[in-house]
Amino acid sequence: MEPLRTDEVGTHLVSRSVRLSAPPVSASLAAMQRPRALWTAPDEPTVVGGGVAVAVEADGPERLARVRRSAAALFDGADVDAPDAARPRFFGGLAFHEEATGRDPWADFPAARFVVPEAQVVFDGGDAWLTVTALDGEADADTVGDRLAELRETLESLDDAPPEGPPGVSDRHRTTSVEAWHESVDAAVSRIRAGDLQKVVLAQALEVELDRPAAAPDLLARLGGTYPDCHRFLVEPNGGASFLGATPERLVSLRGREVETGALAGTTGRGDTDDEDEWLANELLGSEKDNHEHELVAETIREQLAPLSAEIRVGDRGIRKLATVQHLWTPIDATLERDEHVLSLVDALHPTPAVGGLPPAAALGVIRDTEPFDRGWYAAPVGWFDADGDGSFAVALRSAIVEETLATLFAGVGLVADSDPDAEWDEVQLKYRPVLDELERDD
Ligand SMILES: C=C(O[C@H]1C=CC=C(C(=O)O)[C@@H]1O)C(=O)O
Image (tube, rainbow, N blue to C red):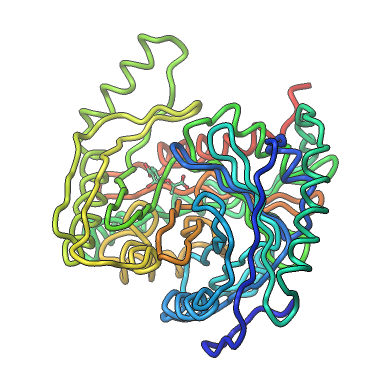
């Protein structure tokens, strides 16, 4: 189906839901038609999607406002018969920059794309719900009901199989050599010291040739084992690519007027022993450089929320431990002054200085001028929203785009005045690990 690109959406959604005896998540995802979607977040229902009831795409500075208007027109007058848990949602995300470049490997990823899946399975505690959605010009409640019954049978007969192991890596290619990295970091640090900007996040990409095609559901299932507290996501455009990851960074979630977000910036590794791990955590907590890098993120998020909020609550700075790294982390919650759509919050917050820099325009200029590859959807918002404008978005870090036997991984680091190119290089390599560990075979 061609995505809708106009604000003049003349049709509406027809949606029906049924309770399922919960099928296995990974097998459900594997059973879905492309394009597939997966969303798992701490304290939220897991959602699997497949196929397209409707897709909305937009680009340019107004891309989120345009997506929001198209979605509102589709939800307005929608014929939805579903309990709250099973309500239809739009899933998708954005490119990091406002315009899509169309460069490989991102050729099929527009600057913004959100899809209401034809089939959506929500796993909420022990319950599971299947929702089938169509456009009213293409189906009516009866045909949607027939499809619901057919899919229910398929899903309820799925077996739970353990995920396949890593595909194996035969070759790898870095977009940035050590020498080029040193040059870029030195140049960025000089500009920061000269006062042109306060912080910039520079990234690298790693292309990896696989021994066999990697199955996204298997990769995500294994990532779930190692990174259970992260947001795991899968988005697929038209074509054969899958963009997936297990990110520790929530961008924002909105329920009613309650906002949850946080600052995540400042990184160190994990220790081999408990003592070494604690020592590393204490070094990070005491590091002037990392606290400065972190403070710029926390303060900017607070400033961006302030005009929209009746109250903002900034928690204590602490350590977020993941299997391969530990980060400085500050929880930030807010209560909004008035009703807002989660896409307005996404618009206000992206890119935070955890992935862009400060001031944002100067940092984006340095990123565009320096990085020899297209960030595509890496480090950009991915998530979902519903008819009320509630939703949840993560920052697409610790991620890769995978197609057949090629995977491209992305990782970046925040640079401030006293950043050291060698230490930052090592940090990039650590941040590849979550996805890379699931691609490489041990033997
Ligand atoms: C840009 C990335 O991480 C960000 C999030 C947490 C810590 C970061 C840091 O310490 O540099 C980065 O700002 C990435 O993982 O690619």
